[in-house]
Image 1: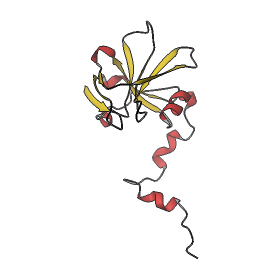
Image 2: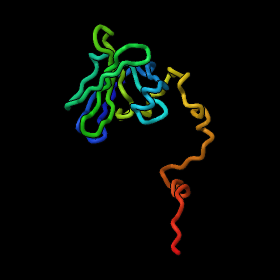
Image 3: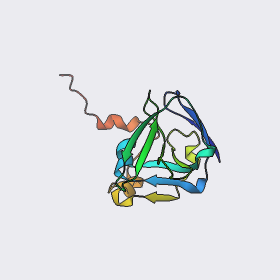
Image 4: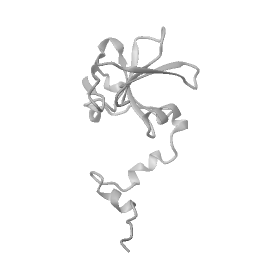
Length: 146
């Protein structure tokens, strides 16, 4: 599947060919912190199908496996774009699906690092929700006008 995407501020744009069977949810603690969320959604993509425009920054991290990972992101808005393992790790990158325009069409086929998953993750379908943010007002105490 051909996908396109951009960082939040638009300074970085990209396109790639994604195999929809290689979409992964990662629950590792690194992904939780780096994505500022409960997990990260990504796809394993052949580097040769990936094209990017704009200047990026890189952050090097050694994971719990001992392998070095390079996180690539926009230097303006800090949107994560992809990650890779340096050296002879193969021709693949892990494309971050948050900035992919077609992300709703890419259904995860695998969850990894489940041992780090937050304990409430499977119960989310039972949590009340709303179409936008209208319910958030009920969570914020009103100041007394006295």
